[in-house]
Image 1 (tube, rainbow, N blue to C red):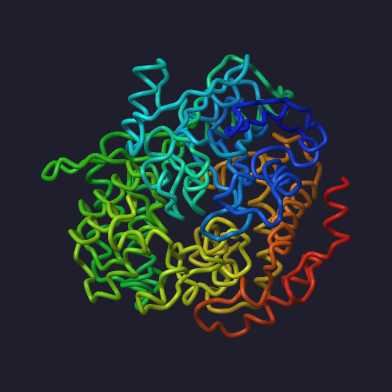
Image 2 (image 1 turned 30 degrees about the vertical axis):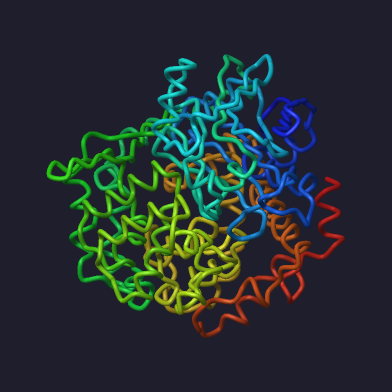
Length: 562
């Protein structure tokens, strides 16, 4: 298959040394992105490592499509040991960083060690520079990007950084780029902050390829053209277009998961977001342009979005029906470097404990306290799984990760997807909700209220998504970047993408198994679901795992020996 090219760059921020090495076999087998990051992490992060310790590694990886002139490919992946889930996790971000990353000449850049001083790390074609940045201590994201511009003549598109939340090891801190784009879920920003790294910048003019053949160039052009010509509702409302519909079908978590529809959904949904948009934003070279810069004239708030998941977390789940209030929370999370989903859910848990749903002023106060670990924010910064007992509320997490929207009590297949996801309660890992609403053609839809046949579909969907994350291709390409087109772009044979995805999922699960995790603790939902045990048995069987959700040792050895 067509794959990313070039050496791995390893940066030790403790010793301030760097080195390169060839990883051709890894690139050939795992393509790029999440695939390469997972393969490298499996061998290079000790199974007993502390997510906040120097032995944890953060591996930024590009795929073979990041240099292609086409839509849906302007993304970059980051893989490491999650401070939130305590397992291996990959997250990817859009924006414009990916092009500058590959311009530095490396398909993979990993950071290891721990610096005593707050550092900025500068990656260039000719090497790595380490810059102490004590003046950036506690700085918000826009301040960091202004520093990069003023001191180094680099735009925000060259920078990945943490805000105060990352420095303070908030377990759901994000790594931010292009100011409003985030490696959000799982707290990799806290892992970067624990290494004493405030920012990493990339710059250069390298062209790592790979070159596309004539067939792939034709497909790339067709995808780009169709992305530009599409009149998809997301171009007008973003993912917020789903808000009212999700509420109508009982899949919108409300008031800390105590309800599944919100009477204020229309007030914070897609039409209201569209009314506040000011033009359209995009990611590198993408003609789909689904990002929505927004502003509210009365309050003066300017942000991007918010997206549907943020509207759920800071809107319906917090009992807040005021869109500018949700916009403010979204903007402050971007500035402070926080995952909006986890942060909003944690805040909603506190509101449940205090019987304070709908108090937008308290919501805003809490997220500031969380980012700086002040007062009750210090407890909430640990995430719901670690603080729910103290709050006296239910533990609405999977593998320690707070739930995204698309409530599994209404969408049975998505509930199964939440249970099996190696990442935790993340909607994009298995994505069965798209078949259950449905957001696909009617002939591809699945009934929402049953699990029959869903395990097989979930294995297929997880494998497909893992292959997309190796490419790296945006989920919003659904319907445009078809499997056939993706195979052409990657020069893959039928079955190659499913096999690639299965290798990635097996390695993720195998790593977490080595950390003592299995079915009993990790794949149990916080609510009853008829047929779950049988569906899990079927799912594990199709994966070739044990009935306890463990990847057999011989299977892991084969994966590493390929």
